[in-house]
Image 1 (spheres, rainbow, N blue to C red):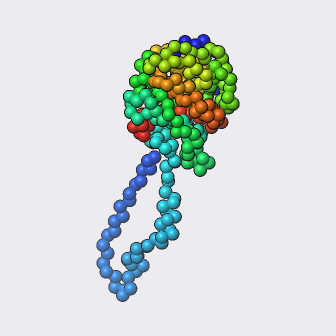
Image 2 (spheres, rainbow, N blue to C red):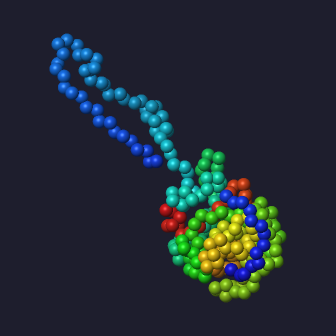
Length: 261
């Protein structure tokens, strides 16, 4: 990523049940002299449950909450409870530099459905990593909040805070010799090693500069990126219009096998 000046101001972010089995034992008693066994010695008849009772018992069993399609329980557990928008960026393998992006929305009943995409995308040249460092040419795997946007061009109508600034201009060529001009016309900051609530141009790195930063969703220039996710211009604009800060949106990104864990 190019070097940017710091600007903006910080903002506030965001059992197993143990069952004890009781073993009931009974002592043998002499046979009673009466012809009718006492009630305590009368064998209990097996109680058969009606289909309706069995169905009711089944419905009463605890059920796991619905998960985002393609996302496994470990990954889902990292999605905040209050999040109702999740942008899932899926690569085929750990070394893939192309991906598929889908915006999922959570319905009032808790189920997730597609609200945007699928859109093709590029990610970092060498693929993905769960241990990102500056210059490794890999996109960090994980679940990150997305709440700040900006770009060289005017706000297209985003509900996220949007910083229009000429400093989003970029020149030069990408890894395939493609022009980078216009790549930052619109961007969405991914909250990896940054201070949420500030312009994407802000350079403060809480984890240190050696852990990288400036990881954005930006306009696709037609090739792999340094670490960002890149969407076609119209797709990115559609995403900007769809994201709602009240939905506490996150990006869930990485290779498919990792996200399915």
